[in-house]
Image 1 (tube, rainbow, N blue to C red):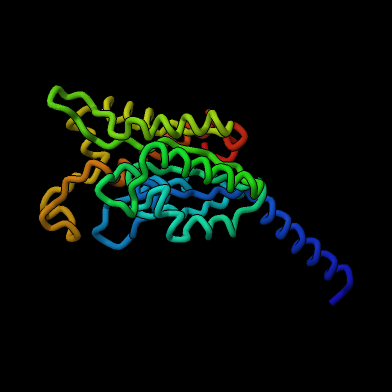
Image 2 (image 1 turned 120 degrees about the vertical axis):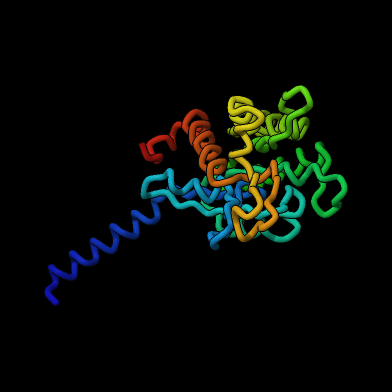
Amino acid sequence: MKISSLIIILIMMLSVQQSQQSNIRIFMVGDSTMADKSYTPGNPEKGWGQIFPLYLKHGVDVFNHAVNGRSTKNFREEGRWGVVMSELKPGDYVIIQFGHNDQKIDDPNRYASPEDYKQNLIRYVEEASAKGAIPVLATPLSRRSFDEQGNLKDTHLSYTEKVKEVAVLKQVTHLDLNARSRTLIMDWGEEKSKELFMHIAPGQYDRFPEGIVDNTHFSPTGAFRICDLVVEEMKLKLPELAKFFKN
């Protein structure tokens, strides 16, 4: 091989390596509303996190570590946060979204009181920051829960407020997905908003032969619509990332 050809090959390899190293990296930690779900036939449930990469241009790597049933407590206790910490590099973004399972007072493995939830979030933020990463807090997404008068209930109450308190205290960005999802559900109304969630009629999917009514987890329609809102919020709160989203 000629020396000139070898030099060209080396330059190309170096260029690719530098390109890979300069990619924006976004880590995601959270619960089932964010998590990747199986694409096996007959499973309509989707998390917004698995839809998220479809909105991004080349040059952004997404690592979704969110898992069903996890809270700020057991995500750490199971060693999942340790895995994320071992992979974080300076400049990486970490989107942190919990709350659905922290409030389950009847489950000691997941439950965290509002104050414990706040302290857990502070610890996540401080540890990510110590690695040079950029922590981004997200308020928990609203459940579809209407009262007898047709008003949407606030299903996360003080947990949402604790996220905001930590964001102010630690001076980090927060994505108010609770407010955005509440507006979406109310705009769609009590009946139509069922389309956003797992309201499956009997016989519609083999996985749910008797049907299912689930006002927490998202249908494909819901996952995409929630992801629309996430992207809108990120463009507003993290303008430096706006150029990485597809038009």
